Length: 158
Image 1 (tube, rainbow, N blue to C red):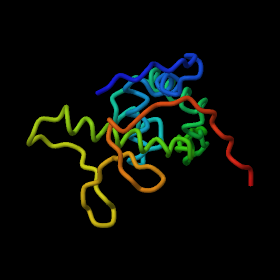
Image 2 (cartoon, helix red, strand yellow; image 1 turned 180 degrees about the horizontal axis):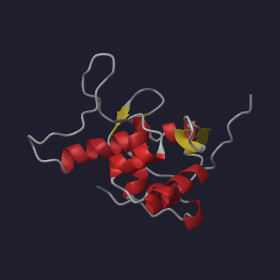
Image 3 (cartoon, helix red, strand yellow; image 1 turned 30 degrees about the horizontal axis):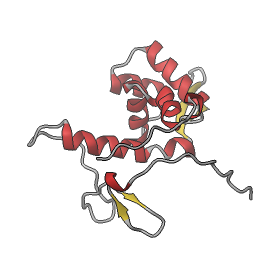
Image 4 (spheres, rainbow, N blue to C red; image 1 turned 45 degrees about the vertical axis):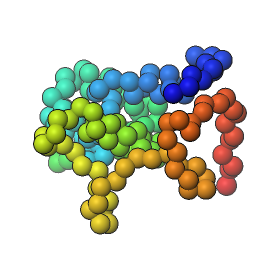
């Protein structure tokens, strides 16, 4: 692969660095994974992940601060108010990241014949794969990719 000239991008503006500062540890990714499986409550995250209360609390706080989760109050009979953590649209958009990491882990970390997580179409149960595709629908491989600095256009307001 031909080397690309390094991008003269200030670290404060690097989207990969910014994403890694929020998602760059196993607990953040595992909490988000659990939410994709339908879990929303603190006790469920704690039980499923075998994570300490303090670590879970800190990670959920960070994910709420960055608008990945919304903290929604609920109350069951004769109990104090508690909270559910629901993925926001920003959080839901992380499915692309998690699917890519699952696919990479399946390809490179899970031994042949070992049970793993399959990524399947809900419609026909056939395997799905991540791909890079341009606006015309053409698929691209790593050798076709170049990084470039550009200004992010603001989304138009309705």
